[in-house]
Length: 380
Image (cartoon, rainbow, N blue to C red; front, side, top):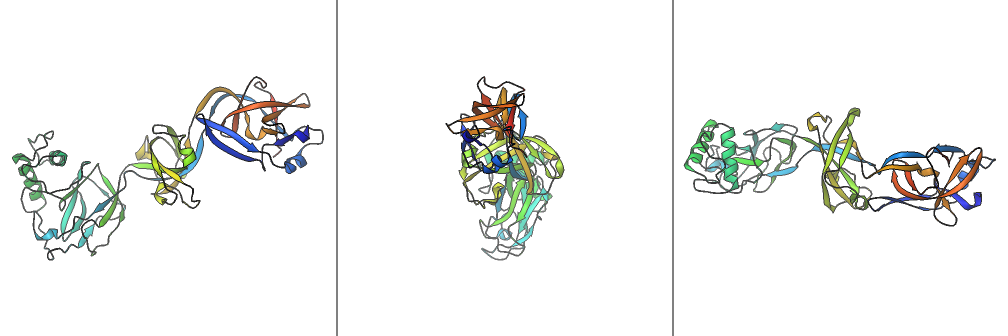
């Protein structure tokens, strides 16, 4: 019998390929010489393990990083904002723009907080998803105007404004003037990119892309911003990315030993092996896709930015199935797979049909095995 089997271990090449939502086990038999050396002289395997019945999950554990949500670049408006408009900065001549202050890396900025200054003129944060793309003034209409009115209300400058209306009304002009007066600005009733920027919520400064004194030309990145909520990013090989989808639950092992529950927010559609922001080194040059995870308790996830974490994907779950350790499988000479069943001091070979792989075990189909049987495994 020993000449007909090869242990499914060591020199055996194990390939896990996606098949029907689970994992199919494929092998190429090796020499098995090391295992033959370990085998007992009485023909019994070096060790045994039980056949068990229960739920089997095709879980996967991957490395990721703990970061912050919604990374974005904030660029300078350009021009010479200190020379006119609603600003009061000194100005340095037409077309000249110099960064005179920026919020430091690691700081958090909330609504109406300072992000940076160009020629002494402050650009402040307001909440919204539509970017500032023009100077808003009386009579203008659009989603940007609605966002502005909501912010003026939240800050106490928009009493009586209808924030569901997209028109820059006379009341909006008054609200802007009140806001400008509170910051010592010229009360023009107009507001634009030289004054504010919109972001979905409070922002964290991840990096200063420009140093104070640098030329803040139009479109030049000043700050890299993120949201203030923690999130996790990781990469998966393209072949495995199809096994996960948005909404799938995950468990994250945090720095310091804590555990956080979360779910997959998005699965990237572009494979990029060289992007360090996706949570992997990119050193193996394999095409990978970026996957973002939101945490159920984002505020409770502690750890440095870009700290390494482990991500456990639940994957598919098969209910009430028989399974054996993966290393109990034998690659049979006639093809297919089998296990050694050990009973009453004897051993017999049983052919099995492997099913889904999960956490070191493999589902075995058919009625040849029953729960509680012992199968041979290589000696440790």
